[in-house]
Image (cartoon, rainbow, N blue to C red; front, top):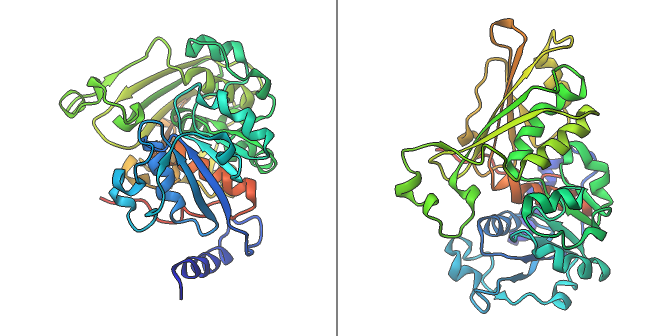
Length: 373
């Protein structure tokens, strides 16, 4: 049996009993995808996940700085999976031959190329912040430059499957949520949707690993700088704040007051969000509320009462693990939310969106359990 066939039959057996599966498993035509900006952490994470996907062929990957270099020379962990794939200069014509293109790039890059690819019939999945904020002026205020493609904002679908699954299926342009916004929104959605907390006083106290800063060399990300230490940063205003607030407003149906404080911690991967709200509604069984809200969500795991999820429990997986607490049965609710910032917080969520867009089982390519230790 060939390796591709083995993966196919394994998936068939897995998904035939998958309680979260909303569409029947069927044979698919392999689709061609491209990756723009494949040398960063989200790019290599995409490659790792796509190597396990039986219905996707990575046809092109771009990098201006590494053009001509073999992917496996830059990332030896991918030897045996992408031995013939080399980085190339971005070419809209070549990228336009793909069924879908991922942008794993700094902000502003997708603005320049997304429109042309959409015109060629290619679907775009953007992991950057370029299309996450619906208001172009708001985006410009936080990113310090004019929005480069405001005419595309109406087409962009915010790629949080737990909120926009049906819209994602028919989308041509996906704005993959940021890592902090994913962890915070998933932790607060059940409470906001049911009107159970004071929406004027929400606190998100969040910690991230150093990969959240990207692969580029920065003094603050050096081991000697970040190791054995922890610090808050961007307390007066982080770029993810308007994105988080936008999602919470949508869930609450009204303006929200949010205090968001991110922290850098000495770990490689992971986000831990501790979320605080003051209960104002009938909250007799918060555990049941969370379990019911996420009962059919394959990428969210509501843990048993009294649990304290760890970032290592989601390392390398596309899961968000949640636990809800009500200290001393008072009027404060505390939600603990953990994700891998490179998977559910970036590349895994991007792949989850691709699967929905092309009708594949939603977690294809992401069935492996988290890594321990």
